[in-house]
Image 1 (cartoon, one colour):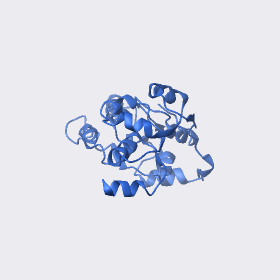
Image 2 (cartoon, one colour):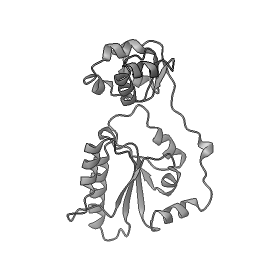
Image 3 (cartoon, helix red, strand yellow):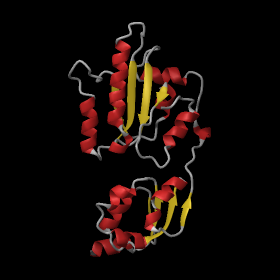
Image 4 (cartoon, one colour):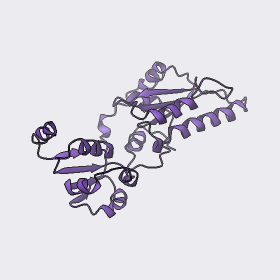
Length: 231
């Protein structure tokens, strides 16, 4: 307790940009009196059912920022004070669409000229539905294999492994298992979470986002800036 109070005395306000982060810090340091809650998730109900200090936590929230009006509406029962909406944005000027980059990145990723690359970016968690994505790729491969005129290979790259959700991550990897006639192990690659996503966007042919919960899918803006069709 003494250590927590010493740490809390070193700052005036805590800025939390994820529900898990806010709950963890507040759970560890009950002396936090002022929190600016930057709300990215829409599913507060999922957290409040398991959080022991909800009343204490909400008293500490001095202000909250939402990325959409709809997300703000989802939290209206909490009666948060000083709430504002600041939408997400993306700086398209940082995108380098130089001639030859796409071919270079596809070569680095081992893609052939007739290969189709599907991409999904996001932390591997259940509401982002990576299991469903792999299942869709498997079904697409089945349909492709039944049509001999389609001389293409379907590939999927998922970027966002953090090893913070081992149970769901294991479910995803189970779907990619190399065993069985429906294996997609040679077609699906999972990469760790990274901010350097340009090469994946540049190399991709299609972006997919099957999330059941998104306050605002920022990756959709990025995919749009790269001219990708989106599902």
